[in-house]
Length: 397
Image (tube, helix red, strand yellow):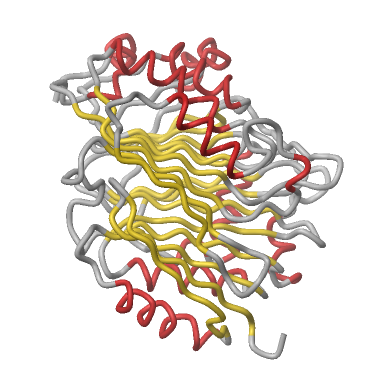
C-alpha cells in the first residue's frame, strides 16, 4: 500500500514500512518527533501491527454555564475518487483547519490499514479512504467543518456522494451556538452549503414518547447510492442518560492524578468493564480532567466509540459501532456498563433491511437489562437506507 505524505516524512524512524499511519493537527505537529520516539507495536489481536501516538495533552474539558452538553452532533460523509488512500491523504494543516472550524483538537490517535481514529477534545473522528465520521459534543460547531472540508477534498480530486447529519435532543439547547440553535437552522445550513450534485435531500425528526427525539438530515447524489452497502451492515448509535451514580464515579480522576490522559484512560477502560464490550477490538481510551472519558476501538475495518459525561444532574454516555448482527449484543454490553435510566438506540441499515426485525432484536437485547421500550420509529433516507429509532426507560421509573 502506498504511504501517505505524513508517514513518508517519518519513514526514516521505522525499521520496516509500517502499515499504520498517524496525523496530528498543526497544534501538535511540533510534538510529533517526541511522539514517534515512543511508538510501540502493540496488536496481539490482529494480523498486522498497530501503533498509537500519544499527544502532549492531558486536560481538555469545556463546560457551558449551565453544564456540559453530552449529546453529540454526528456528521458522516461519503466520497468517491481514484486514489486508494483518498481522505487519508489529508495533510495535517488541512485537518487542523477543519477541526479549528469545529473548535476542537486532537488529543490521541491510532490507525490501522483500513482507517485512522482520532480522540478529540470533544468526541471522535474516523477517517477512511472514502468515508469520514466526525462526532463532537459540548458547544462545538460541527457543521462549520463542511465548507472547509469540501475545499480540501476537492483538492484531492474527491467527489462528495452522500451526507448524513444526526443528533439527539440537547440537554442544554440554549447553550448551542449557530448553526446548532435549532434543527431547522442546521438543515438550512447544510442545504445552502452542500453541492448541487447532492440532489436527493431529506430532513426528519423521529419522535418518541419522551422529550427525546432523533434529528436526521440526509442527502445523496442518486437513489442507487447507499452508504451501507449490505443489509447485514449496521451502524448503531446509543445515547444514555441518568447513569447509575456508583458506576459514573468510575469516570472521575483522582485528585492529584498527574498521569497522561492515555494512561488514566487505559485504567478506566479496564476497571469499568468497557474492555469486555468488543473483545477483539484494539481500544484506546482517554481520561479527561477532572472527569469524562472517550474511547475509540478498531476491529479491522470496523470502529466503535464511547464518550462519557459523568456529572450528577446531567450524566450522559454514548456508544456507537459498525458491524453485522453482533452490534446489538455490543450495544447491550455497553448499556450494561452504565445502567442508565433512559436509553435511545438508532440503527442505520441499507435499503432492504427490515426495521421490524431491528426493533425486535434491540428490544430483546435490552429487556433483560430492566429496560422497557417506550417508542419506536423508522424512516427511509437518501444515501442512508433505513434509520430506526427506539427509546427505553428503566422499569419502575
